[in-house]
Image (cartoon, rainbow, N blue to C red; front, top):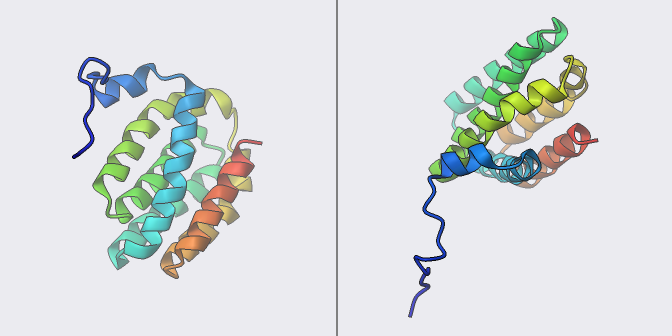
Length: 153
């Protein structure tokens, strides 16, 4: 025996369209869950080239925050997390994260009038990278949760 999905109740809407019409709170909740899991998986599966890419986006994020460039800051932050998703080596998690992040960018622009929050959370993002480099999945998960807790306050 297996699991069967009733085709009459299954949602046939493409995921990208579903994410596009999602309310921001639900979409952000999905993003939060994904960020913790991709951090954990990246700590286990990242390569040296992944680390270089993640570090580059973190540096772009830091520079944009220092210069008060909010659009660039948001883009670098999203790219930082996308590069972690790619380092997880789980293509489904990475694709889900990329899809969710596209729809959250505009919301971030509405909720962040300046780059202060990005400066305040830099240290946590740096700790996240260090835990990924160290190959410590539990610490990576916990730091991702800490970042999310700080951001949503």
